[in-house]
Image 1 (cartoon, rainbow, N blue to C red):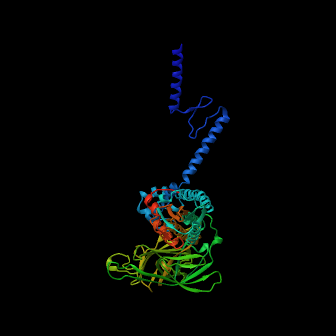
Image 2 (cartoon, rainbow, N blue to C red; image 1 turned 120 degrees about the vertical axis):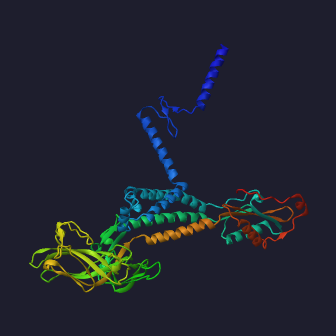
Image 3 (cartoon, rainbow, N blue to C red; image 1 turned 60 degrees about the vertical axis):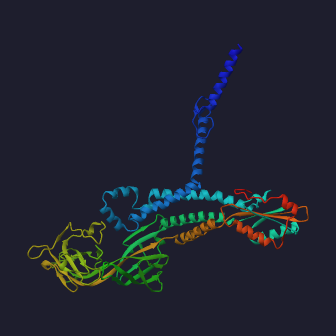
Length: 584
C-alpha cells in the first residue's frame, strides 16, 4: 500500500509540474479556456463574459495608446508625413494648377486612373495624408504631456546628494588646503551659483546641477511641431485661392464673382475675402534672342495700381514671378502672360456688335494662342437675329516660310490673327455654363466663300475680314497684353513661421546644451587641514565636462589654496582611478 500511495503522489506532482510548464490557455471557473491577452479568468454567465470583454478592450486600447504616444512611433509618423509630400511635389496638383493636372492625365492615360484612386492629384486633402497628419498630431501631444509633467517635477526637485566616493566619477579633482571646511563650502556654493548651477547643501558636501534647458529645448521642439501642424491645418481649412486673367487697362476687385476659378477651404466664408482691387496698367516682358536659350523669358513684370479697402489710397506696384504683391492680408502672384487681339465686329446693318480684346490661351512656349470670340444677339443684313462665332489662332511672330501657323518667337515681332467664322446658335440661352475659351459649333454653320470653300482669313493689325453674304465684318484693331494672377489668402503663415523658428531654437538647445552634475566635498583630515574633492558627471555625452570641472577647481583655489599633503597620507594613499559609467 505504501508503494501505491507513493506512486499516486508522484503522478499528482508530475501532473502539477506539467501544468506549470504547459503553454495551453488557462481554464476558467466554468471550464472555458481564457485566451485573453491581459490575463484574468472569465467568470460564468453573461456578466462574466461582459467583464472579460471590457477588460480585453481596455487592455488593447491602453496598449495602442502607449504605442501611438511613444517617441519611436512619432518619429515614424513624422518620416511618413515627409515622405507623403513627395508625390505632392512630383505630381501636378489640381488645387495648384488644374490645367497642368488635366494635361498630365491626358498624357498618361494608364497611370491617371491609378493616381486618381490613390488621391495623388490632391495629396494634401487625401484621406491617407489626413490620417498620417492626425495620428502625428495625437502622437506628439501624447508624448509632450507626460514629459512636460516630468520636466516640471525636475524643476521642482533638488540636485542629488554627493556620492560616498567622488573619486570614482568620470571627472574628479582632489587637493588639501588650510582653509576651514565651512569656508570652502561657502566659496564653492557661491562659485556654483555664479555659474548658474542649482545647488543643494547637505552636511559636508554640495550637490549642484545644470543644463535643465536641454529638456526645455526638447519640449520646445515638439511643441513647435504641433504649432506648425496647427498652422498647416488652419491654412487648409480657411484658405482661399483663385485665378483671374486681366487685360491691360482692366481692373479686378477681390469678390467671388470676379474670379475665373476659385477654390477654398471647408471653413471658408465669402465674408473672409480681403477688400482690395487693382488695375493692370501695363505688362512688359523680355526674351533671350540668341543662343541655345533663344525665346526663354528673362523678365516678366506686371505694372499695376492697387487700392487697399473700398476707398484706399491708390498705390503703384510691380508684380513679378516669385515677387508677389502683399496687400490686405492676401498675396497676388503673377503666374502667366499672353496676348489679347483687339477686334471690332459689325453686324449686317453696320452696327457695332462687339468691340474689345479677345484673351487667347497659349499653346506652346512661343505663345501661339488659340482665340475664341462669341457674338450673341447679332443681326444680319435682313435684320434676322442669330449668333456669330469666331475661332482660330493668334501668332505673335509669324513666319510663313516655316509652312506652319505656329509662332517662331514669343515677342510681337510679326503678329497675325487667323480666324474662321460661324453663324447659328451659340447655345447661351440653354442655361448651361460655357467656357469663354471654347466654341461649341454643334448648332452652327461655318461661312463659305463664293467658291463654296470654308471661309477663313489671315489678318494683320489694321486689316478687315469681310463676311460672305453681307453678314458683317471683323477688323483687327490692335493688340493688348494680359496677365493671369493668383490671389492667395492663407491664414496661419505667421504661426507656421513662429513654429519653424521655435523648432530650430528647441533643436539647437537639445543638441548643444549638456545636462551635468557637480559635487564639492570638504572634510577635515584630522591633521588640521581640509580635503577638498570635486567630481562631475554628465547626464549625456560631453567632452567638455573635464574642462569645466578643471575651471571650477581653478576658480575655487583662491579661497582654498592647495598645500602639500601629509607625508604619511601620501605614502599610504594611491591616487584613485576614474571609473567610466559611474552614476550618482
